[in-house]
Image 1: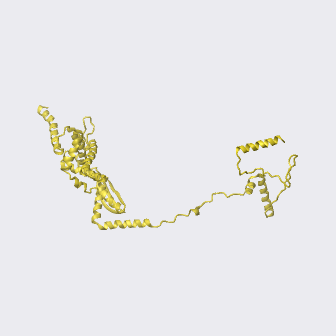
Image 2 (image 1 turned 60 degrees about the vertical axis):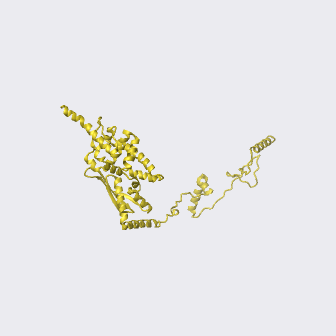
Image 3 (image 1 turned 135 degrees about the horizontal axis):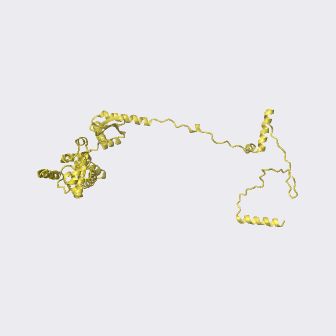
Length: 373
C-alpha cells in the first residue's frame, strides 16, 4: 500500500463526517459537537451495523430517549402558546404534533430521511422509520448539547418555521376517536373486526380491519400495524357517514330492531313453591315416641299388632292398676294416691328469683329445724 492509498483511506471518514456535519447543520441549525450520537440516531437496525465490541448498532435507545423529550418539550411549548386552554385540548394538540405520522412528514420535509442507513426492503415497508429517526435525532441533540438545545430546535426550527401549531391544534386527525365519539352520542355499537393478519411478499406485517356499526358493515382499512389499519377504516367509515344517507339509515334501522328485541317481555319467573321439597320430619307425639323407643312400649305395640291381625279389629286399650306402694313407718301416702315413675310433682318452677342471701337464710333455717327434731 503506497502513501496515496493510505491518505485516501484516512481522509474518507473525515470527508464523510464533514458531509454529515454539514447536512445536519442544514437540518437542525447548528454543527454537532459529538458526531457519534447523530450517526447512531440515523442507523436503523435493518442495516446490520455493529460497534467496536461487535454488538448491534441502531437507534432504538435514542428513539426512546427522544420520545420522552418530545413529550416534555412540545408539552411546554403548547402550554405557553395556548393560554387558558383545558388539559384535554393541550393533550390532544401535543399528541398530534408528536405523532409518528407528523414526525415522519417532518423528517421527509427536512431531508432527514435521506440520511438514514437501512436496508432497502425495510425503507420501503416501514412507514414509521422516518418518524423514529426524528425521535432518535432529538435524543442525540440532548446528549450532545443539552435540554436547552432541544427546546431551541423544536421551538425555532420546527414549530415556528415548519408547522402551523394553531392549524394542527384545531384539525381533527384521530379518525378512530372521532368515530367513537359519534357512535357514543348516537348510542350505537361499534366494533373493529380483524379481517386479515399476515405478511406481504417482502415479509412485512399486514393487518386489515372492518368497521361494524350495529352489525352493519362500515369502512375498511389495511396497514402495517393494527393502529394504522383501524385509523384508515375509521376514516373510510366517517367519509361514508358524510356522503351516504342510506348507510346512516341502515345503522339506525339495525339499532331500532335491536332495542325492540331488548324491550320484549321475558318469560315469567319459575314458581319456586311448585318445586318445594318436604325435607322436615313430621313431629311425633310423646306417646308415639315413647311407644317406639321404650322396650315396654315396643313389646306392647307388637302385642297389639298381633291381636289386630287375629281378630281383624283394633285392640282395645287396657289399663292396668298398679299396686299401691308399701307403707313405711315414716311415710303416709295420700288417699287414692298412686306411684308413677314420671311423677314430676316434686319439681317446681318458681318465677320469683331469690338472691344469694335468701337462699343462705333458708338453708340455715332448714338446718336448724333438722337439728331440733
